[in-house]
Image (tube, rainbow, N blue to C red; front, top):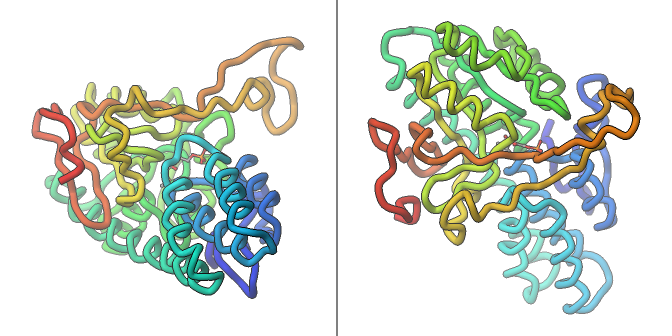
Length: 338
Ligand code: MRU
């Protein structure tokens, strides 16, 4: 089953807010529904947001309106969430076909979908090869990860968790240690659900246990996704990723980012220029709707953080593996443009 697709003239997507309790599919015929589903994380994860942006423009092109109103709708869609560059990338790419009519727009959107499927297969294979290369002394590796980077973050197969799936298929996986990923628990709700589906051995850990467990030698490699990679390699991803990178450096283990080329934003020179979504206090002061703090408690809730390139061992895309130097130090900027 695909996370998001175009089915009989509408967008269908798995409502990820219902998981793991229930797999429910939403059929979307109105742009406002799609924007709302993106904002409440019914569809989420950078590659899936790219496909949502692409299919959203197909929806706009199949709705009544003139060119100006369609462009205004597309602008609203690309701003639904700010950090994952894939959303605006998917919108902008499909908009190039707008003047050729709705059929051409849909064809371009479906190409974005199909390229995502192929890219994830490719990242899985080269990521698994890289992991074996980085961890030569263990026939089966132990992987730590954060958030959800599996099929639910893309169309059919994920990025970092796609590498895990490939390692499993190649009998090269010992165990996965995902973090819960507070406050919305994408690791506990979504990654654990996907790992169960693929019958991968795993043990969930609370976010704050990760640095300790890495330092105790329980992990061979950290694999994460990305929402935006700046031209110098600085990488925005789910908040908590930077802590994992610091812990990996301290423990002397590799830290690998797995993301499609569409996540690389060469127009953003460094991580300092990446807009980080602030999702407000509501998600922090309660768990599943139950308040966990005294009334009136304020909270700060950045949805993402930025890991400086110097903490990243390699970036895997569908086209290349960019190694960031044996000492983890990047020299020069713009290396991702080559
Ligand atoms: O807020 P989310 O759930 O959309 O955040 C998702 C992540 O941070 C993922 O790690 C990232 O999009 C990469 S998915 C391959």
